[in-house]
Image (tube, rainbow, N blue to C red; front, side):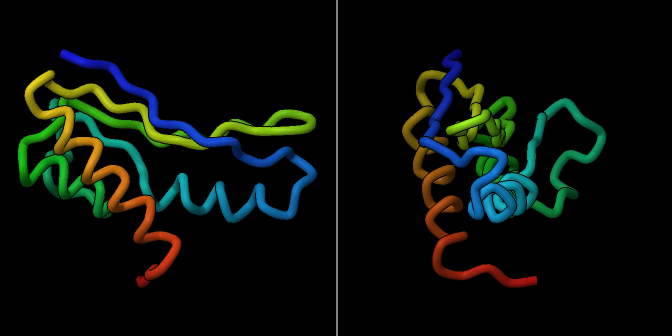
Amino acid sequence: EAHVALAFQGASWTSEYSYPLMVMQTILGSWDRSSAAGRNVSSKLAGDMSDHDIAHSFMSFNTCYKDTGLFGVYVVAPDNKLEDAMWYTLDNMVRLCHNVTD
């Protein structure tokens, strides 16, 4: 079992980019395969993780500090499915840069 945090420099509280990152965090969402929601979640990333049985759980995060921040996704996945988990995670993050729909 691997625990991986894929993170990037985020924005400070006073930055104009803090709110878009908060929206991105909400869109990516979080998921745990032991939750009652199961595959019935609205996050595309959660659907991908669930449909392909890739990870045990994931959680997006956006932490804002005074002069910087940290944005990313924390994933818990089996060692042999980690590459797939990272692919779907990055695919969903890049998708937010190009194509966000209802």
